[in-house]
Amino acid sequence: MKRHDRFVFLILTAVMAASISVYADDDTGAATTVAIIGTGDMGDSLGPRFAELGYRVIYGSRNPDSEKSQNLVAMTGKNASITTQILAAQAGDIVVLAVGWPAMETVAQNLGSLDGKIVIDMSMPVEQAEDGYYVSIVATSSAEMIQLWNPGARVVKAFATQASYVIDDPDVVGGPVTVPIAADDRAAKEQVASIVAAMGLDPVDAGPLRLSREIEALQRLYMVPLLQRRGAAWEPYFRRSSFWECIWEDDWSDPVADAGKLADIPETQDPPKPCPGT
Ligand SMILES: NC(=O)c1ccc[n+]([C@@H]2O[C@H](COP(=O)([O-])OP(=O)(O)OC[C@H]3O[C@@H](n4cnc5c(N)ncnc54)[C@H](OP(=O)(O)O)[C@@H]3O)[C@@H](O)[C@H]2O)c1
Image (cartoon, rainbow, N blue to C red; front, side, top):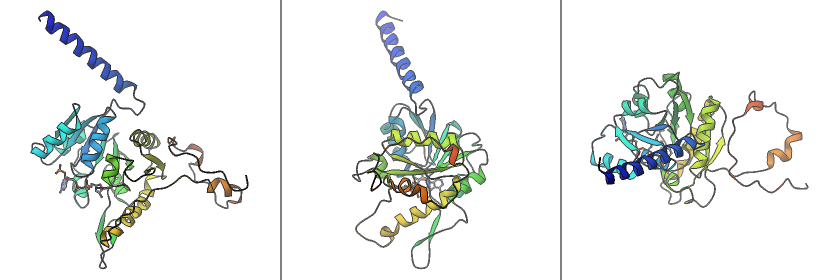
């Protein structure tokens, strides 16, 4: 190695060491690989956002060699690559299922073992009823079906109720963008919540995975203006409120079973005005 080459090598090694320590130090757990299955609207929005946070992104596509796939990899950055859906899923610590139904039914059952991996579902299993409005085609929810097919996976419902362009730019709708997160695995929910917050979005604890049914209902509601062919769309976000704290003492219900051991979710919105009269 010539002196000049050795100098370049030393600089490169230092740069690599610096970037590795950025991954290792990141409190969102950015040393991990994220597999994005599907390179459509959501895949090509989430991939670059994960890459910005320092994650290694590996896309899984039916056409990894296509020009569109290669352009997506180039746009995502130096830690990105693309392969088949199954190889990507096997390489990922986190597997993001950015495919729709009915394809999901085949995709989610053919990714190999997903044991121990965080699997993020954002999909909506629907068909149009006779009047054109969406109805669910599953008795439970997409997230629960994915869990049933992959019992060892740590399934998390997230990124379901905002449009892909809001993932690209959370400021585009002019207010906090809440992302309801449902999961049975507390640590998986916390990890996804910290990723959501690091992306500039607002994570909201939506309870256990079963509550994905309600998230999917919100998705169906969100689609109404599109199906009605209205000019205006509505995005379903939540705002912080002090209402529960104001009526706390008059509350009649029993707390949920996990009320004492809730997931740690970053607080991202400013507290609302205090209760009236306090
Ligand atoms: N778009 C949004 O704003 C939005 C917002 C919230 C939730 N979602 C949900 O996110 C999921 C993805 O939505 P999207 O808008 O990204 O959909 P999309 O643009 O249609 O992309 C889906 C991707 O899935 C892969 N795919 C399609 N058919 C497949 C099949 N038969 N087998 C295997 N893979 C197939 C394709 O990737 P390859 O060509 O690379 O294989 C395709 O690009 C949906 O469930 C949707 O309901 C979407």
